[in-house]
Structures are given as C-alpha cells and as structure tokens.
Image 1: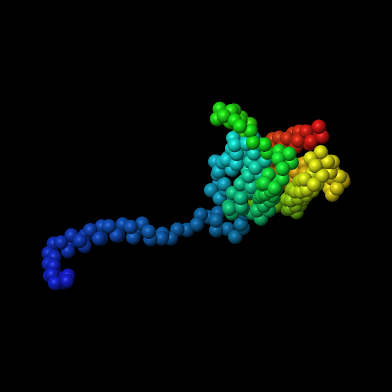
Image 2: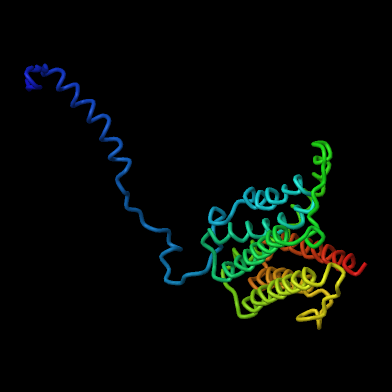
Amino acid sequence: WSTRVGSRVCRVSPSAVVMLRDFLLAAIIPHAIALRPIATRPPPHTRSSHVTASLPPPAALPSLASLAAASILPTCLGFWKTGYAVSYGYGGAMLAAGALTLRCSVPALAQAHALALVFYGLRLNLFLLYRELALPEEIHQMKKREASFADRLKRAPVILGCSALYYLMAAPLRISAVAPTSGPAAAALVACSFLGFGIAALGDTIKTYVKAKEGKGYLVTSGPFRYLRHPNYTGELFGWTASALLGALVALSQGASFARSVLPWLIGSAVGWVGILFVLAGEAAAGEA
C-alpha cells in the first residue's frame, strides 16, 4: 500500500497495516463497550406511583469542613484587630454560612432562612465599614493597638471560641436545609428572623447617626429607642431566637426518625442561642455602664 506525501511516495507494508488494525480494535472496542448504556430495570420499590419526600444527599449540602471554614476564616481578622473578631468576623461568618447553603439545591424554606443570614451578615459588615471609614474613632471604637506576633497569637482562644459560637448559631439552617416539608408556622418564623434583623439594622443606623451628630455620650430616644432601650440588641436577639425556634419546629414536626437524625444540629442550635443570648446581654449591660 502506498500514498503520496508531497513529492515523496511512502510505502507501507501489509504487515504494518494489520498491526495498526489490531491496535485500533484493541484500543477502541473495550472503551465502546464500557461507555455503552446498559438498560436495567429499576428496583421494585421505585416503580411505585407513590412518591415520598426524602432528605437531600449529604453531597448536596455544604460540607462540615466548608462550614467550619466559613466560621473560622472571617473571625481570624481578630488577629489584625481584636474587635474585628466580634464585628466583621461575626457578620462574615453569618454571610458565608448563608451563601454556602444558597449555592446548594435546598427547599424554599431553607433558601429563605439562608437569605436571612446573608441579609444580617452583609448588612452588619457594610454598616461597620461605613462607620469605621466615615466616623471618628470615638464612635466606631475600632482602635489600632500595636502588638507583637506573640501577643496576637494569644488571641487564638478568643477567636476560636467566637468561631465555634458562629458555627453553632448557623446550625438551625442545617436543619431547615434537610427538611422534606414545612408549614406556615416555619415560614412565619423565617419572617420573624427578617423582622428582628431589620429592627437591629434600624437601631444601629439611628444610634450611629444621632451620636455622630450630638456626641458619643448623647442618649438616643428617637425612633425605636422610644420603645426599646437597645433596639439593635433586642432585634438581633429576636431574629436569632426565631432562627433557633425554626430549627426546633422543623426537627420536631417531621417525626421522631427525622428528629434523631438532626439531633446534633438541634443541640448545637440550642447552645448557639444560649451563647448569643449571653453575649448580647453583656453588650447591653456594658452600654448602660
């Protein structure tokens, strides 16, 4: 067998052609067989016309490692400035936890629940950034302190403790993300979370505006401060309480088997709620001092 390439005539022996044929058959046919779809009959229990809700597979949800990273990495800003661990780290952890869940295929209830966390975290960080850039230091109180590398490492226990708290505060979202069904009560609790976080945002905005105008020591009595001494803390606690109650309601309304499967998250949710309750109570008491 011969062929012309340019001005040259290349001759190939019959034995080489046979060898090439055998090589192609050996290389292609096994892959063709492996890739060919094989018709199989579905298991008997899947041929039923009755469809039951099932939990999303673990692969459809954020991994535990990614949730831990979402809590730890933003809080590590505390190594730069101590106050960042409980401000930008707080908002960043909540924002990241909600955003990770929104990227997954979860029920509508969990999407709304995740949006509440995203709203809280994004709003808080934008507010903190504006306050730090536009207002005097006596208002935002993010003072820069010189510290050695060893001194910064001593902040690690506080940073890890804050990260653990943020991780547990997002635990109710994990429960709503795997719930096969939900009801109007669950939707109402999501709405209460948004309401609480909205009140907190309003309180932060009014307090910052008035104190920037009248001075740090001025007592704010306008807007929601007319009815609540600390609407920012009260609204925040209301929002996190609604989130924790949502996790408990969903867990208990799906039956004993479902409740047992999410029991670690349910316990974590309760611990996170108690933790933020003490933190906000301490902040409110410090504000009165």
